[in-house]
Length: 277
Image (tube, rainbow, N blue to C red; front, side):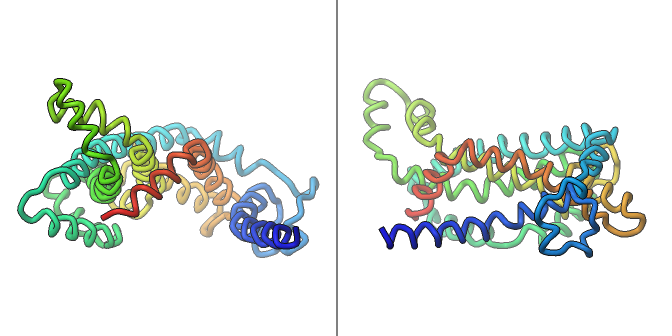
């Protein structure tokens, strides 16, 4: 009993440590007290100091629906295209033996370790010549490509854990290899595909650096660009952290909900997709 109590106390402390930043952002977003004046006592909600003006300012902004639409387009389309291509890539790397296969796997793993920000300049120079700057396609291409690289290895590792005998049995029943892939492998790969879709969506949905470099038209602004624009404008030359925190919470809430809803798939995808190579 003592051991269980100690264990639960330690886990509770870790949970508080992990959740405190979210709580701090929430308190900052609804507090009338400036960030610089916040103290330990200010972290306890007080009805006199609570206001929803920051949320009202954001949600009533006429451009907010456009930012949501653009973020969903960039995140959703790039996730579907990237993970769709990653499914074929992972299957090919897992099931087919071809010259240079292992070298290609190591190369994909290596390039996936580079931070995306180092690719901004090459992407910009290349897409400027193709007249793709300030267009949907100009951002969808790099977002989708990044999803293929990252998710391809995850899918490959996951498919390694699926017995090939299941595909062979399907082909004995009359399916082609392509039919066995769609009827057997893809349904069994739902956990890793769900994880890949979630991660591939979150990247473009929260990206600021690439979007800021490629987008100049207000009609193509995403939520990340709108966050900076609104919080800076309201701050009169500085950053209004109440508005910034409110916008961050609005952006982060859907992601938190998705992680909670797909928690089973995320755990299964991470455990089975990361142990084989």
